[in-house]
Length: 533
Image (cartoon, rainbow, N blue to C red; front, side):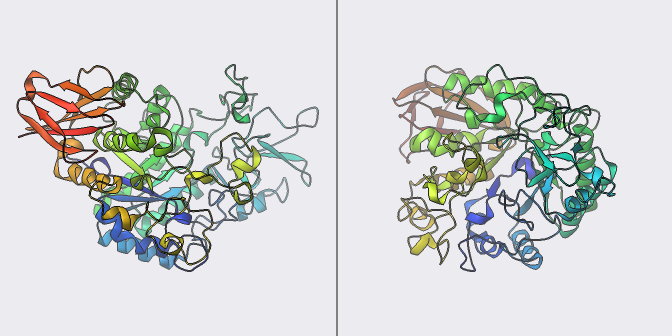
């Protein structure tokens, strides 16, 4: 196959508030990202995905957009973004922006007009409904952040819908004017040269026309978040969303056809695999990569992972390209969920499965979730439903660059606390350690570039026993074996008859991996890539 950049490449997510501050306000910015492009290129990634940078009141830290065609002053200026884009491209790094089309800030000029009166031309740009007969919300839909998803507007006597905070009013994507305006937003950034978009909460974008109650969730049990009291059958994943995704795909593909490089669309979709696959497209092509989050919460044992991987591969539609992630700005870090030893094994898994991997900043350092003192909590998710473990601040803490004051992130007080072990768990220190997890990530990324079998090759699971997960990656004459010990005791893995003389290419532990007599001696918590001698 002729692989496109987003098929053979690796994407690195940057949460801009937490990456690098250059102006001394304790918040990361665009110039900070530009300053660290050398690090990213040296790490070996191919693209950066930047979480929202648009002007925003920051009720939900940028996911409440007040202007889709600008840059928030906290992060810099539009000129700063253009400089960052040019410098990234000069280093052969692609840039993917976070596109937030489901909702706007309640301070966006469109919503200010919409709520001005029932007769305003932009009234139908948002979702307004009369109260229920008892005067309460129009239905039982619950915000993903807890509480009713409907906010009363006393001046006009109606409720508006918000899937998240009341400061994040949902757009009405059934209105052609909304669709046209948001497609123009995409063109604004594509014209500037961005290489694609990660589309926020894509499956939320269309709601059932009659707004019926959502059915109760029979599996709901405290302390699950309140949103889980109901099944979001009518408020998400409506059939019409696929036509919108197809229109977005047509725009992106149109820019790719200009000869300036392929553009990619990545959809955030938390759905079961059978429904997720529809977002690749039905009658028309959908998004290139519907995010596959299965590894984030998967049972961490060899048999479960083998089944999960096989079922996902089997479910892909013709031409559908897989993708994998271990975490993001909303979910616990992999080192927290799996421990430091298995975080290394997870890195090898992520970077050797078939498909496009997305890394979350700091995972290459083995960062764990950071306990945030109650007085320092910033996340509205945690503030609305405290004590349930739903807060996202612990995974958004600043990147530790070195052992200087504030870990080289800022000259001021960081907006969130640093990891407590930052004097030793930082980029500068770990870059010098030949066996650090950072060095492992660099070696894995270099191996992907050197061995096409690891990025675009065929994939086949191997028969294994116990805690070992193993698979073959093959491209042309090149055949590699990846073997992962997900347990805490050593294992002997008998290699298949066709394996011949295979030797270790890379271990997650050190350079002492042993393969002899058509067997691999896996140490506890070790992953190994084998290649033919």
